[in-house]
Image (cartoon, rainbow, N blue to C red; front, side, top):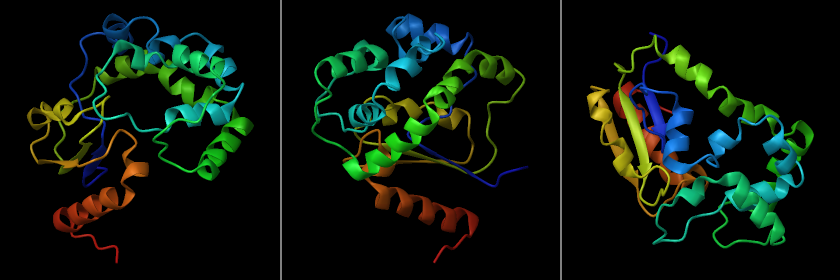
Length: 204
């Protein structure tokens, strides 16, 4: 009743988890999974606040083609410690300019990282609240996946037709997890075309 349609980029809609997602993350990838590690108050903030620019320099990069999923790729705090110990070097495949990274770093230098990290600390409460909600979506929906997303591959959306009656799925080729930085024009065009066709909305 509040929205006419739904668009998701990379992140699929899922059924309500049978147990706390934090327990799932820890079972699959260990206690160093970033969502689990973030539950320790102040630890991640102290680490990231040392060098906000280095945080974004490490994160905002493409994953080399042929890379296989691993437990370690979810161990963000351990990976950042190792990255800092190596001198926070420039990495290949940056998806944004140093100038844009400085904007992010400047904002987080001012605010700190606690606000964003607190979202992950609310995982259990969000899961508990979700028990009363219907996971089916009745509105027309568009799922935009990317060909090279190592964390959320297109196959992660295969269950979504069971939850959403009016669903379209599309894949942006030659694009990874940071879709809106890697392929902004393709993402925008895909959304605009869908909004025009499904909603009758025009933007230009």
